[in-house]
Length: 469
Image (cartoon, rainbow, N blue to C red; front, side, top):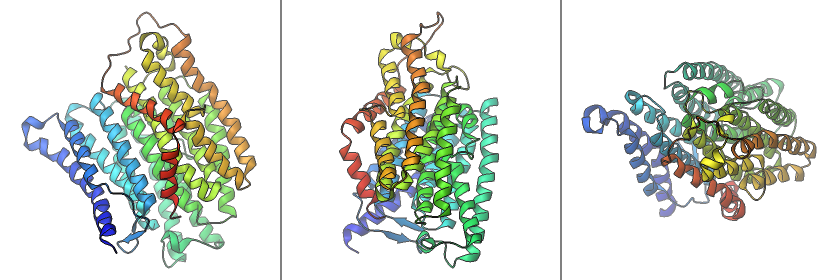
């Protein structure tokens, strides 16, 4: 290996280790240094500011670590950078708001950093054993984060998320056990190719079902509305942007093990049912966070549609994930800035926002239109590239379902915009004071516009990340 590759491998592998060190620092140092108590958020920000020292330009090679259990390649580097960006934004929103009681702030940031390490390990997993361990490292902290406020809605959200997540983990480990009895190795490379025998197919379907829970594909989405609504809004944003991304990457790797057959038919129906059910259920929602929850489920269906586009589909997914994350984090940031209760604002609570806070309303409208896929915002191009790859591969019927459901989604996204611009504000309306959250909101609004109008740089990064597959 060249010195450049060695330096790249060492510094890249150091990123999750530094996150673990930062998590322990945030948790333990304030216990012994009294002046730092209550400053965990600032320590978290400082730790994130130090991480760019370890970032290096990805090398066009794949490096196998620990006997192939972990792999470093351009795709890993791309998703790791995405995960760190999501973490930084959620930390900023957490510093701006109050996602956890004062006595639990250390645990809050510790769990958040640990979950990010789990996400990084998940997308770098080279075999199913490592993927399962990483899945649990990602999931367990998020279960605790969902109920960290110890409020009734939060505890209910954490309980439902934990119980259904445990069921999904059980399905995953059962599938891995079946495959372990049939295959000498469980690396993704060893599992690729051919038509599996019926028992092996059952194992693959169990594993796919387990990861479909994390991605929130219907009918494995039951935890999403209550978990997103009851969890702190910052954690809802993390679940929507980061946790979903990890599940999508692993599901795509499982999908790509097969050229056609039963598994592809299962994914076809998962994508179609998800898009139809999620968009129809979103129509009746009155709470902003529940609407965003069903929106998240619908976008999981759009991402699954991109699976059928082959290499072009992977490039579309890698473009779609940051575009969707910007709109989702921005929308949840608006919810955090306006929330007064434990379940977040109702859609009617946004009435009159355009008159009282025009810039905030404009940013929220940009997020809604981007999620709906309105040009020239980035969400339009994300859906276009995702659907174009599937059409090129001959899956026109699935894309027709996707386009029709995108049209349906316009209704509930416009419902938010109508409330802000066309409904009068109630006499007792209060929209809070500008703060750090608004910086994140405006950065995300600029991002969904720039990633649409100037999409080539992000597309080029996605193409380089997908080049190894």
